[in-house]
Length: 302
Image 1 (cartoon, rainbow, N blue to C red):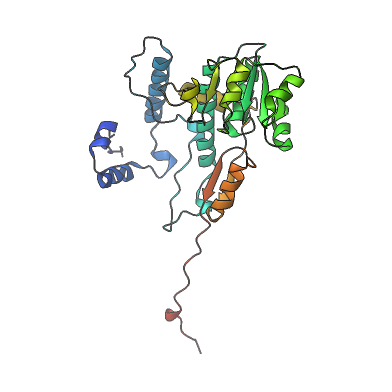
Image 2 (image 1 turned 60 degrees about the horizontal axis):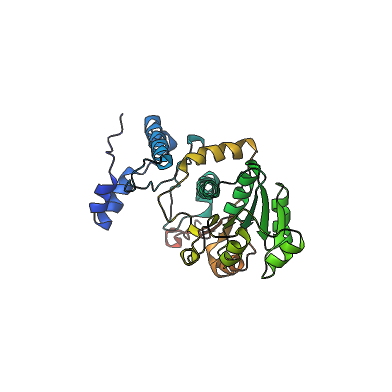
């Protein structure tokens, strides 16, 4: 039997009340993989490719609506978990679902930033936060273009992680510029900041100006003339399938998710602030215990 659910436009959703919007979304959520028509997936992919082409075109209208959804190839789709309690159990969150979220977010952001820096063969690109999810993938994408990468990290373990790709690791710190100069590096061609650790002044100094400095984490970028990637309409959705293919064939690698208990949120955030964690962190509720048996219905059998 054909699915009779009608597609709802973004304009229609905007005109709804919150309750109406929630009801419309609930009615249209698929609960099994078989409910997703192939023709619908083809339409989504075709639309994403068209929007990506418009963004690449110099004739694109400045007022064109910005895409707001990621693109996932059919093999990366996962079934939506069906909760049996008001809180979602950890076991009900499929690893494929988490991996899809991780891949699409990291892939689009890293590919967009590298595209904005336009690294050329034999250039040197400095990446702050190189051991994070976006930083690590950006490191690989820059190296694939023939440029060299100096990755700024906060621990020996993080340094070893990026050096296996062929990057040069240096420790973060206020004396970074001096240490680089001692090593014979007076400047770099471009800088990517994924850390948000207040390093943009250093980045501009090393790059010789703000023109080829990009950040995804420092809201003070505009005061230094630095580009804040993601604030404008430019996206790299067309690169998500490319990165996904690279991850699948082993030519690219992204760190695994750090899945932690929601009850540990305070300590997890402390670890994030101290740069002790790399990659994406997901907080999930602890498993909900089954309700106790109703002992009032039990009787003793003689």
